[in-house]
Length: 404
Ligand SMILES: [Zn+2]
Image (cartoon, rainbow, N blue to C red; front, side, top):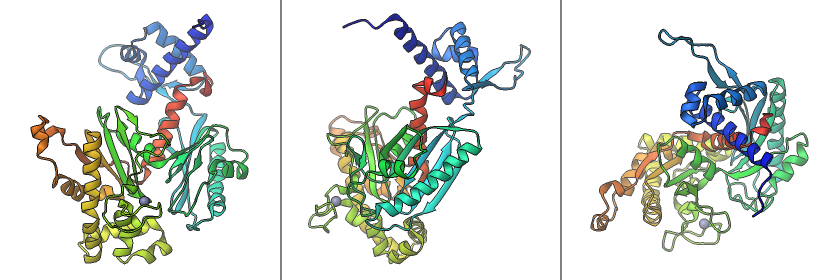
Protein backbone atom coordinates (compact mmCIF):
# COMPACT_ATOMS: atom_id res chain seq x y z
CA UNK A 1 0.00 0.00 0.00
CA UNK A 2 1.49 3.39 -0.92
CA UNK A 3 2.27 5.55 2.06
CA UNK A 4 0.34 8.76 2.47
CA UNK A 5 2.41 11.94 2.25
CA UNK A 6 3.61 13.14 5.63
CA UNK A 7 1.64 16.40 5.56
CA UNK A 8 -1.61 14.50 5.00
CA UNK A 9 -0.91 12.23 7.95
CA UNK A 10 -0.24 15.13 10.30
CA UNK A 11 -3.34 16.92 8.94
CA UNK A 12 -5.42 13.86 9.74
CA UNK A 13 -4.01 13.71 13.26
CA UNK A 14 -4.73 17.39 13.82
CA UNK A 15 -8.30 16.95 12.55
CA UNK A 16 -8.75 13.93 14.78
CA UNK A 17 -7.45 15.86 17.80
CA UNK A 18 -9.67 18.87 17.04
CA UNK A 19 -12.61 16.46 16.93
CA UNK A 20 -11.58 14.94 20.29
CA UNK A 21 -11.59 18.41 21.89
CA UNK A 22 -14.92 19.38 20.34
CA UNK A 23 -16.59 16.08 21.25
CA UNK A 24 -15.41 16.53 24.82
CA UNK A 25 -16.93 20.02 24.96
CA UNK A 26 -20.23 18.71 23.59
CA UNK A 27 -20.34 15.85 26.09
CA UNK A 28 -18.99 17.60 29.18
CA UNK A 29 -19.84 21.26 28.61
CA UNK A 30 -17.40 24.11 29.31
CA UNK A 31 -14.04 22.66 30.38
CA UNK A 32 -10.62 23.86 31.45
CA UNK A 33 -7.67 23.00 29.21
CA UNK A 34 -6.36 20.68 31.93
CA UNK A 35 -9.72 18.87 32.08
CA UNK A 36 -9.73 18.45 28.29
CA UNK A 37 -6.18 17.08 28.39
CA UNK A 38 -7.08 14.60 31.13
CA UNK A 39 -10.22 13.43 29.35
CA UNK A 40 -8.74 13.11 25.85
CA UNK A 41 -5.24 11.92 26.65
CA UNK A 42 -3.76 14.85 24.69
CA UNK A 43 -0.89 16.80 26.22
CA UNK A 44 -1.57 20.21 27.82
CA UNK A 45 0.57 21.79 25.13
CA UNK A 46 -1.41 20.13 22.35
CA UNK A 47 -4.73 21.17 23.90
CA UNK A 48 -3.52 24.77 24.20
CA UNK A 49 -2.50 24.86 20.52
CA UNK A 50 -5.78 23.27 19.38
CA UNK A 51 -7.79 25.62 21.61
CA UNK A 52 -6.05 28.61 20.06
CA UNK A 53 -6.96 27.43 16.56
CA UNK A 54 -10.57 26.79 17.63
CA UNK A 55 -10.80 30.22 19.32
CA UNK A 56 -9.42 32.01 16.28
CA UNK A 57 -12.03 30.28 14.12
CA UNK A 58 -14.76 31.30 16.58
CA UNK A 59 -15.67 27.67 17.28
CA UNK A 60 -14.89 27.92 21.00
CA UNK A 61 -14.61 30.85 23.35
CA UNK A 62 -13.31 31.38 26.86
CA UNK A 63 -16.06 31.48 29.47
CA UNK A 64 -15.82 33.89 32.44
CA UNK A 65 -13.09 32.67 34.83
CA UNK A 66 -14.47 30.93 37.91
CA UNK A 67 -12.85 30.88 41.33
CA UNK A 68 -12.54 27.39 42.78
CA UNK A 69 -10.98 27.19 46.23
CA UNK A 70 -7.90 29.27 46.90
CA UNK A 71 -6.07 28.61 43.64
CA UNK A 72 -6.00 30.70 40.52
CA UNK A 73 -9.37 31.22 38.81
CA UNK A 74 -10.05 28.59 36.16
CA UNK A 75 -10.83 29.69 32.63
CA UNK A 76 -13.00 27.19 30.82
CA UNK A 77 -13.50 26.77 27.09
CA UNK A 78 -17.06 26.62 25.80
CA UNK A 79 -18.42 25.59 22.44
CA UNK A 80 -19.43 28.76 20.60
CA UNK A 81 -19.66 28.38 16.84
CA UNK A 82 -21.84 31.48 16.93
CA UNK A 83 -21.66 31.95 13.20
CA UNK A 84 -22.98 28.55 12.09
CA UNK A 85 -26.24 26.63 12.45
CA UNK A 86 -27.82 23.32 11.51
CA UNK A 87 -31.17 23.54 9.73
CA UNK A 88 -33.37 20.45 10.15
CA UNK A 89 -36.30 20.21 7.76
CA UNK A 90 -38.99 17.64 8.52
CA UNK A 91 -42.21 16.53 6.92
CA UNK A 92 -44.67 14.25 8.69
CA UNK A 93 -48.30 13.32 8.09
CA UNK A 94 -49.54 16.78 9.17
CA UNK A 95 -46.79 19.29 9.35
CA UNK A 96 -43.73 20.76 7.67
CA UNK A 97 -41.16 21.87 10.25
CA UNK A 98 -37.90 23.78 9.97
CA UNK A 99 -35.72 23.84 13.07
CA UNK A 100 -32.59 25.95 13.37
CA UNK A 101 -30.17 24.66 16.01
CA UNK A 102 -26.71 25.57 17.22
CA UNK A 103 -23.94 23.00 17.55
CA UNK A 104 -24.95 22.21 21.12
CA UNK A 105 -28.32 21.15 19.71
CA UNK A 106 -30.17 24.09 21.28
CA UNK A 107 -33.11 25.40 19.34
CA UNK A 108 -32.57 28.86 17.82
CA UNK A 109 -35.71 29.13 15.72
CA UNK A 110 -38.60 26.91 14.69
CA UNK A 111 -41.22 27.25 11.98
CA UNK A 112 -44.12 24.80 11.71
CA UNK A 113 -46.90 24.81 9.15
CA UNK A 114 -49.62 22.25 8.53
CA UNK A 115 -49.70 21.08 4.94
CA UNK A 116 -53.26 19.74 5.10
CA UNK A 117 -52.23 16.19 4.10
CA UNK A 118 -53.07 16.41 0.38
CA UNK A 119 -52.92 12.67 -0.38
CA UNK A 120 -50.87 11.70 -3.41
CA UNK A 121 -49.73 15.28 -4.09
CA UNK A 122 -46.05 15.68 -3.16
CA UNK A 123 -45.78 19.00 -5.03
CA UNK A 124 -48.30 20.63 -2.67
CA UNK A 125 -46.43 19.32 0.39
CA UNK A 126 -43.10 20.45 -1.10
CA UNK A 127 -44.48 23.98 -1.53
CA UNK A 128 -45.17 24.16 2.23
CA UNK A 129 -41.83 22.55 3.06
CA UNK A 130 -40.09 25.15 0.89
CA UNK A 131 -41.94 27.98 2.71
CA UNK A 132 -40.80 26.91 6.18
CA UNK A 133 -37.28 26.27 4.87
CA UNK A 134 -37.06 29.80 3.41
CA UNK A 135 -38.40 31.26 6.69
CA UNK A 136 -35.72 29.43 8.67
CA UNK A 137 -32.96 30.50 6.26
CA UNK A 138 -34.10 34.12 6.71
CA UNK A 139 -34.01 33.64 10.48
CA UNK A 140 -30.48 32.23 10.21
CA UNK A 141 -29.39 35.28 8.22
CA UNK A 142 -30.92 37.62 10.81
CA UNK A 143 -29.07 35.74 13.56
CA UNK A 144 -25.85 36.12 11.58
CA UNK A 145 -25.45 32.38 11.18
CA UNK A 146 -24.39 30.38 8.15
CA UNK A 147 -26.31 27.11 7.69
CA UNK A 148 -23.69 24.39 7.35
CA UNK A 149 -25.87 21.25 7.35
CA UNK A 150 -29.46 20.66 6.27
CA UNK A 151 -30.73 17.21 7.23
CA UNK A 152 -34.18 16.49 5.80
CA UNK A 153 -36.32 14.04 7.80
CA UNK A 154 -39.24 12.04 6.42
CA UNK A 155 -41.53 9.58 8.19
CA UNK A 156 -41.02 7.03 5.44
CA UNK A 157 -38.35 4.68 4.11
CA UNK A 158 -35.50 6.28 2.19
CA UNK A 159 -33.21 4.60 -0.32
CA UNK A 160 -31.15 5.03 -3.47
CA UNK A 161 -28.26 7.28 -4.44
CA UNK A 162 -29.02 10.15 -4.43
CA UNK A 163 -31.52 9.23 -1.72
CA UNK A 164 -35.24 9.47 -2.42
CA UNK A 165 -38.40 8.72 -0.46
CA UNK A 166 -39.33 5.18 -1.45
CA UNK A 167 -42.98 5.35 -0.40
CA UNK A 168 -44.94 7.31 2.18
CA UNK A 169 -48.24 5.65 3.02
CA UNK A 170 -49.29 8.56 5.29
CA UNK A 171 -49.15 10.92 2.33
CA UNK A 172 -50.03 8.49 -0.47
CA UNK A 173 -46.62 8.88 -2.12
CA UNK A 174 -44.69 6.44 -4.25
CA UNK A 175 -41.07 7.28 -5.05
CA UNK A 176 -40.52 11.03 -4.50
CA UNK A 177 -37.26 12.91 -5.08
CA UNK A 178 -37.84 15.25 -2.15
CA UNK A 179 -34.35 16.79 -2.15
CA UNK A 180 -34.56 17.71 -5.81
CA UNK A 181 -38.02 19.21 -5.27
CA UNK A 182 -36.77 21.22 -2.30
CA UNK A 183 -33.59 22.42 -4.04
CA UNK A 184 -35.51 23.57 -7.10
CA UNK A 185 -37.84 25.61 -4.87
CA UNK A 186 -35.10 26.89 -2.54
CA UNK A 187 -32.02 27.34 -4.72
CA UNK A 188 -30.26 29.21 -1.89
CA UNK A 189 -30.28 25.98 0.16
CA UNK A 190 -26.71 25.19 1.29
CA UNK A 191 -25.00 22.22 -0.32
CA UNK A 192 -24.85 19.77 2.58
CA UNK A 193 -28.41 18.45 2.32
CA UNK A 194 -29.12 14.89 3.45
CA UNK A 195 -32.31 12.80 3.54
CA UNK A 196 -33.06 10.29 6.29
CA UNK A 197 -35.92 8.33 7.75
CA UNK A 198 -37.22 9.39 11.18
CA UNK A 199 -37.00 5.98 12.87
CA UNK A 200 -33.22 5.61 12.69
CA UNK A 201 -32.60 9.21 13.75
CA UNK A 202 -35.00 8.95 16.67
CA UNK A 203 -33.53 5.62 17.76
CA UNK A 204 -30.00 7.02 17.77
CA UNK A 205 -31.13 10.11 19.67
CA UNK A 206 -32.94 8.05 22.32
CA UNK A 207 -29.98 5.69 22.62
CA UNK A 208 -27.61 8.61 23.21
CA UNK A 209 -29.57 9.40 26.38
CA UNK A 210 -29.10 5.87 27.76
CA UNK A 211 -25.96 4.57 29.45
CA UNK A 212 -23.99 1.94 27.56
CA UNK A 213 -26.83 0.47 25.54
CA UNK A 214 -25.48 -1.09 22.34
CA UNK A 215 -28.41 -3.41 21.63
CA UNK A 216 -31.72 -1.65 21.39
CA UNK A 217 -35.10 -2.08 19.76
CA UNK A 218 -36.84 1.24 19.18
CA UNK A 219 -40.48 1.06 18.15
CA UNK A 220 -42.68 4.08 17.71
CA UNK A 221 -46.03 5.13 16.39
CA UNK A 222 -47.04 8.58 15.29
CA UNK A 223 -47.39 8.36 11.58
CA UNK A 224 -47.72 4.65 11.01
CA UNK A 225 -45.55 2.31 13.01
CA UNK A 226 -41.79 2.32 12.62
CA UNK A 227 -38.54 2.26 14.48
CA UNK A 228 -35.10 0.79 14.33
CA UNK A 229 -33.00 -2.09 15.57
CA UNK A 230 -29.55 -1.27 16.90
CA UNK A 231 -27.25 -4.20 17.46
CA UNK A 232 -23.63 -3.89 18.57
CA UNK A 233 -24.10 -0.13 18.37
CA UNK A 234 -25.05 -0.19 14.70
CA UNK A 235 -28.39 0.33 13.01
CA UNK A 236 -29.63 -2.75 11.15
CA UNK A 237 -30.05 -1.20 7.71
CA UNK A 238 -30.53 -4.41 5.75
CA UNK A 239 -29.65 -5.21 2.15
CA UNK A 240 -32.01 -2.56 0.75
CA UNK A 241 -31.82 0.03 3.50
CA UNK A 242 -35.30 -0.72 4.79
CA UNK A 243 -34.43 -2.85 7.83
CA UNK A 244 -36.79 -2.67 10.80
CA UNK A 245 -39.98 -2.03 8.83
CA UNK A 246 -41.72 -2.87 12.07
CA UNK A 247 -45.21 -1.78 11.06
CA UNK A 248 -45.25 -4.43 8.35
CA UNK A 249 -44.41 -7.42 10.49
CA UNK A 250 -47.16 -9.75 9.22
CA UNK A 251 -48.31 -11.17 12.55
CA UNK A 252 -52.06 -11.47 12.41
CA UNK A 253 -53.37 -14.70 10.84
CA UNK A 254 -56.08 -13.93 8.27
CA UNK A 255 -55.76 -10.28 9.28
CA UNK A 256 -56.76 -7.25 7.22
CA UNK A 257 -55.07 -6.48 3.91
CA UNK A 258 -52.31 -3.90 4.11
CA UNK A 259 -51.38 -1.25 1.55
CA UNK A 260 -47.99 -2.96 1.29
CA UNK A 261 -49.62 -6.04 -0.29
CA UNK A 262 -49.33 -8.39 2.67
CA UNK A 263 -52.12 -9.42 4.97
CA UNK A 264 -52.11 -9.10 8.74
CA UNK A 265 -49.45 -6.39 9.14
CA UNK A 266 -49.11 -4.93 12.65
CA UNK A 267 -50.05 -1.51 11.31
CA UNK A 268 -53.45 -2.76 10.11
CA UNK A 269 -54.59 -3.33 13.70
CA UNK A 270 -52.28 -1.20 15.83
CA UNK A 271 -51.48 1.70 13.48
CA UNK A 272 -52.90 5.18 14.08
CA UNK A 273 -55.54 4.92 11.36
CA UNK A 274 -56.86 1.61 12.74
CA UNK A 275 -56.94 2.85 16.36
CA UNK A 276 -58.60 6.15 15.48
CA UNK A 277 -61.24 4.45 13.36
CA UNK A 278 -62.14 2.01 16.13
CA UNK A 279 -62.24 4.87 18.62
CA UNK A 280 -64.53 6.91 16.37
CA UNK A 281 -61.95 9.68 15.88
CA UNK A 282 -61.31 9.47 12.14
CA UNK A 283 -63.07 12.77 11.43
CA UNK A 284 -60.85 14.58 13.90
CA UNK A 285 -57.84 13.74 11.70
CA UNK A 286 -59.33 15.75 8.83
CA UNK A 287 -60.32 18.62 11.11
CA UNK A 288 -57.26 18.99 13.32
CA UNK A 289 -54.57 16.69 11.98
CA UNK A 290 -53.21 13.29 12.92
CA UNK A 291 -51.11 14.45 15.89
CA UNK A 292 -54.07 16.20 17.53
CA UNK A 293 -56.31 13.18 16.90
CA UNK A 294 -53.74 10.89 18.54
CA UNK A 295 -53.50 13.28 21.52
CA UNK A 296 -57.26 12.99 21.89
CA UNK A 297 -57.07 9.20 21.59
CA UNK A 298 -54.45 9.14 24.36
CA UNK A 299 -56.61 11.37 26.58
CA UNK A 300 -59.60 9.10 26.10
CA UNK A 301 -57.53 6.00 26.75
CA UNK A 302 -56.19 7.49 30.00
CA UNK A 303 -59.75 8.40 31.00
CA UNK A 304 -60.94 4.83 30.36
CA UNK A 305 -63.32 5.81 27.54
CA UNK A 306 -64.76 2.50 26.26
CA UNK A 307 -64.17 2.81 22.50
CA UNK A 308 -60.55 4.00 22.85
CA UNK A 309 -59.88 1.36 25.50
CA UNK A 310 -61.34 -1.40 23.32
CA UNK A 311 -59.27 -0.28 20.34
CA UNK A 312 -56.09 -0.25 22.43
CA UNK A 313 -56.84 -3.61 24.05
CA UNK A 314 -57.31 -5.13 20.59
CA UNK A 315 -53.97 -3.74 19.45
CA UNK A 316 -51.94 -4.43 22.59
CA UNK A 317 -51.45 -8.22 22.22
CA UNK A 318 -50.12 -7.69 18.68
CA UNK A 319 -47.74 -4.93 19.77
CA UNK A 320 -46.54 -7.27 22.51
CA UNK A 321 -46.14 -10.11 20.04
CA UNK A 322 -44.06 -7.91 17.75
CA UNK A 323 -41.78 -7.08 20.70
CA UNK A 324 -41.57 -10.77 21.67
CA UNK A 325 -40.51 -11.69 18.14
CA UNK A 326 -37.98 -8.84 17.95
CA UNK A 327 -36.69 -9.57 21.41
CA UNK A 328 -36.02 -13.23 20.71
CA UNK A 329 -34.61 -12.45 17.27
CA UNK A 330 -32.19 -9.73 18.34
CA UNK A 331 -31.70 -10.10 22.13
CA UNK A 332 -31.70 -6.38 22.96
CA UNK A 333 -30.87 -5.07 26.42
CA UNK A 334 -33.47 -2.36 26.09
CA UNK A 335 -36.71 -1.69 24.23
CA UNK A 336 -37.64 1.98 23.89
CA UNK A 337 -41.18 3.00 23.00
CA UNK A 338 -41.57 6.24 21.05
CA UNK A 339 -44.20 8.44 19.46
CA UNK A 340 -47.61 8.59 21.15
CA UNK A 341 -47.10 5.01 22.35
CA UNK A 342 -44.50 6.37 24.82
CA UNK A 343 -47.33 7.59 27.05
CA UNK A 344 -48.66 4.01 27.13
CA UNK A 345 -45.33 2.22 27.57
CA UNK A 346 -46.57 0.78 30.89
CA UNK A 347 -49.40 -1.19 29.32
CA UNK A 348 -47.11 -2.26 26.46
CA UNK A 349 -44.56 -3.53 28.97
CA UNK A 350 -47.19 -5.50 30.90
CA UNK A 351 -48.47 -7.12 27.70
CA UNK A 352 -44.89 -7.91 26.66
CA UNK A 353 -43.97 -9.46 30.01
CA UNK A 354 -47.12 -11.58 30.07
CA UNK A 355 -45.64 -13.98 27.54
CA UNK A 356 -41.93 -14.32 28.16
CA UNK A 357 -40.31 -17.71 27.61
CA UNK A 358 -39.72 -19.61 30.85
CA UNK A 359 -37.19 -21.59 28.85
CA UNK A 360 -34.88 -18.56 29.06
CA UNK A 361 -33.80 -19.77 32.49
CA UNK A 362 -33.24 -23.26 31.16
CA UNK A 363 -30.82 -21.65 28.67
CA UNK A 364 -28.97 -20.31 31.67
CA UNK A 365 -30.02 -16.75 30.94
CA UNK A 366 -30.60 -14.70 34.03
CA UNK A 367 -33.78 -12.71 34.52
CA UNK A 368 -31.75 -9.65 33.49
CA UNK A 369 -31.64 -11.10 29.99
CA UNK A 370 -35.22 -9.90 29.59
CA UNK A 371 -34.93 -6.46 28.03
CA UNK A 372 -36.21 -3.43 29.87
CA UNK A 373 -39.13 -1.63 28.27
CA UNK A 374 -39.15 2.13 28.72
CA UNK A 375 -40.76 5.22 27.27
CA UNK A 376 -38.64 7.38 24.98
CA UNK A 377 -37.63 10.69 26.53
CA UNK A 378 -37.63 12.96 23.49
CA UNK A 379 -41.32 12.91 22.64
CA UNK A 380 -42.40 14.23 19.26
CA UNK A 381 -39.01 15.90 18.71
CA UNK A 382 -36.98 12.67 18.76
CA UNK A 383 -36.28 12.58 15.02
CA UNK A 384 -35.71 16.35 14.74
CA UNK A 385 -33.19 16.29 17.58
CA UNK A 386 -31.64 13.09 16.25
CA UNK A 387 -31.09 14.78 12.90
CA UNK A 388 -29.61 17.90 14.52
CA UNK A 389 -27.26 15.84 16.70
CA UNK A 390 -26.19 13.61 13.79
CA UNK A 391 -25.43 16.71 11.69
CA UNK A 392 -23.47 18.17 14.60
CA UNK A 393 -21.43 14.96 14.85
CA UNK A 394 -20.68 15.05 11.10
CA UNK A 395 -19.42 18.62 11.48
CA UNK A 396 -17.28 17.85 14.50
CA UNK A 397 -15.70 14.98 12.58
CA UNK A 398 -14.69 17.47 9.88
CA UNK A 399 -13.73 20.69 11.72
CA UNK A 400 -12.43 22.26 8.50
CA UNK A 401 -16.09 22.91 7.63
CA UNK A 402 -16.25 25.11 10.71
CA UNK A 403 -13.33 27.14 9.38
CA UNK A 404 -10.68 25.66 11.71
ZN1 LIG B 1 -47.98 -3.96 5.44
